[in-house]
Length: 142
Image 1: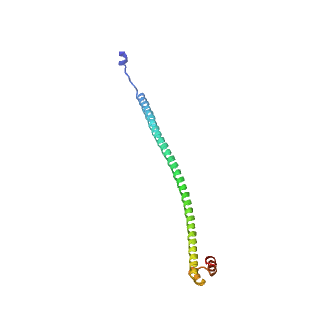
Image 2 (image 1 turned 60 degrees about the horizontal axis):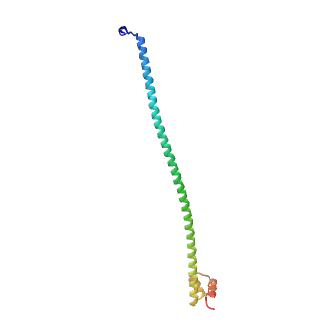
Image 3 (image 1 turned 30 degrees about the vertical axis):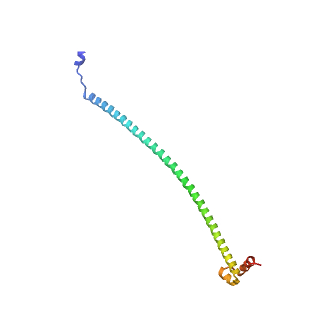
């Protein structure tokens, strides 16, 4: 064993350079695989983030669809309400016209009962003389 420790270990410059190159190559490979592992971890993190963002986009899209559906439904409801209001306004207009016509007829009948002549009743009510004569026939005592 003493011989083993006493041996002269001598390396030539080329052998020493070769060993250094092998060590450097091993260090480069270790560094390369270590960087690859880090890059893979970062890519996995990015993929998880993209998956989360995609999920959130899908949720937002679904919620937008629901909101759009609700807005369309509300629009249809407002259209129906608007049509109902127009119909009511027309009915009110007709009733007002009927009430006005009835008031004019009542006024003409009252004037006729008071003995006002047909021309004067026509001037006050805007009814034609023929209409007034017909009213007088139906609403005065026979």
